[in-house]
Length: 389
Length: 183
Image (cartoon, rainbow over all chains, first blue to last red; front, top):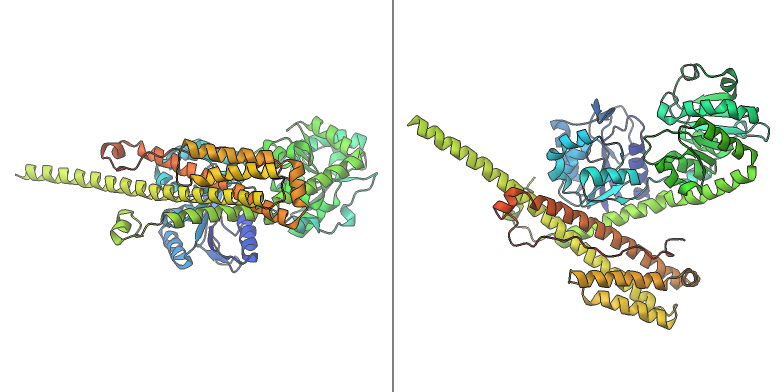
């Protein structure tokens, strides 16, 4: 199958959508499909062979955050050329309402189109003003995918119609096979817990964890807290009690391998995120690595953890609830083992081998419909359809 | 004289704009109708494939005779009316879903999984059921889009939809059998 995938965000910076596109493309190529990805990227950025750069991205404020996007007439013509050269059986657009290459490809494309909606945070004001412009183009999308129930709700309320939910994929084995590292492995007297994510961003929940730690340290004085992620520890720890700062070890940004090993080594992985998560891929990574997961009860997290079957949960933004659950877990190794095992089993349904098959089923459905509907097109017909590009 | 001329131009201008808008809207609607006939054809094909998978299961000899008969009967009902779209077809498909749900008890599924042939048939059936869901959802999305566009005044006033009938969403129970998904 010839598949064209369009990613609206720049490959220069890491991000959930970019990783999703990269992993999906690599998995499909591994299965023998012919895949080409179009994405913005700097000329210096090293790109995998299957990625075509749509040119440099510009930082733009859109939908409440700054995104690196790519637009303008030069980009539009690049998109057109890529589409012409690719002759794709199916075109898969990500985030089709983001003003970047996705929307340009949507406007220019003609064949069967599949679109994946990632975000659950579309502002209705943005949508109301953008709608009249892109509604006719959105009607071209034959198959809509949402990565989570929250993203699907965004589609049903703002775009109309429905979407199939196909979660983000994870290479479960990469995490399951990660080696454990002795400095990060806890002992009965000095157990380890891990936090991952940008420290300075409050919605990742580090302040909630910090507020819970004094209580936890009273019960488990030897606890070690491993904090991985970008940010300046001095800024973040300002105002924290001394014993909490002493219990924390800051690892800075970690590589993918280190992340997997960290998750595989610690006794409990804590995800105290307070909101804005539409999916929670990090939970699945932790579950794959065999970590016992303790997460806030956001609806997205609850769905990943199967309502608490595959990991422990605490009331969101409640440090005392977090402290209570954490202490309980640290004291009961058998409970941790049980949750870790359930988590590892559950993570399998998010493996790329499963997820990519579902995506391929969408491609096939859309292609089949197109093949059946293609009438013998005369030139006049083509002209009327406005399809003569 | 010049005043008459400018009026003529103004009217011409308006006519051109209106003409462009109408042809643009007609093209948009036409594209939607093409998409709609495609999704409907895909749904048809997927339903036929599901029914065939059920026939295969019924004929496999792995289920008891009574269950096989029920499944074969439900599948035949679905295969009998492939081009019809309406209440009867939807009922037949819902019945087939229900028959599958009744036939595939946890014990039956375990029994089928015990043999290579059974595993094979089941995996084909699972994939057929999932694809029916996809096809129906995509078709109903297309129906929603077409219905919304056809409510526009320009399309109603100028009869741009021609004699194509207003599409309706296809509603039937397409849940995968409860015990099939757990592997």
